[in-house]
Image (tube, rainbow, N blue to C red; front, side, top):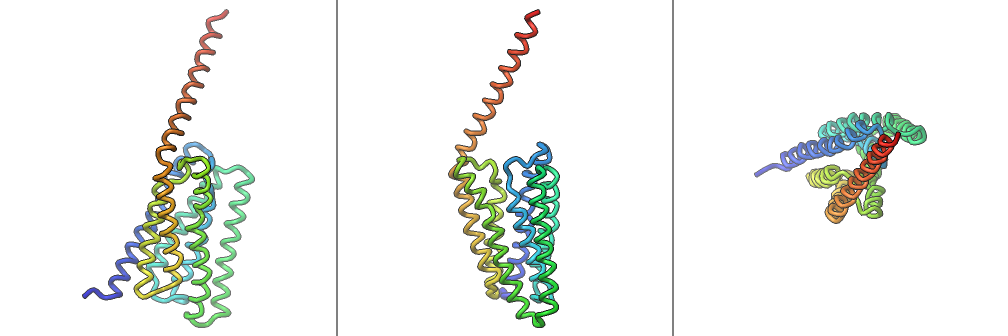
Amino acid sequence: MVSEEAIRTSLGVAGNITAVTLFLSTVPTFFRIWRKGSVEQYSPVPYLASFFNCGLWVLYGMPFVHPHSLLVVTTNGAGVAIELIYLVIFLMFSDTRKRFRVALVMLVEILVCGGLVLLVLTLVHTTHKRSAIVGSISVAANILMYASPLSVMKLVITTKSVEYMPFLLSLFCFSNGLCWFLYALFPFDPFIAVPNGIGALLGILQLLLYATFYKSTKQILEARKEKSEMGLAVMEKGNVAQQSHP
């Protein structure tokens, strides 16, 4: 019979794979930002939330807070590095006002994580209490990370377009939440189970929105392309007419 520890390890490895894939799923988005030289209507909120969330879970998985949680540290350590790269790119191609706000939020998040490390090491002296404190804060941050696409979901409903809600991000948001929810059942860890269960549900909602507005998005993009081509054709005709008159 398969042991509980073996099941937990397998689910943790699966969670690592889906989490890293989740973090990397927005590479096409940032390639588009880099190519166009603009963040357009993309929101920095999901990346700021993920950066902060991963930093807190790295702390939670440390031996001096919650022993035997190496898989939590590895996946979230990778998340911190990847989200930092995304945010640097976002800063590079944002306007001055947005760049200032994003940089300010990043600074606050780093200070909060650093302050929390100092507090738990100096004021709390057992791993049980440290786990409870850091875990509670991490739960709130994890829910924030999963809920951060809500602003994008509102944009999708308003515009009837999923152009700015990447499909892969929604898919792996669901997969990652499900894997870590199952991981937290062996043995039960409410600090991991609750936010990731909510994350899986929010991922399903995003996928349903994508299915609902996929066709209308294609129509909107095709209409935009036709309008752009018509505009170019009119400009070309105008240029030809000007050249034909002495």
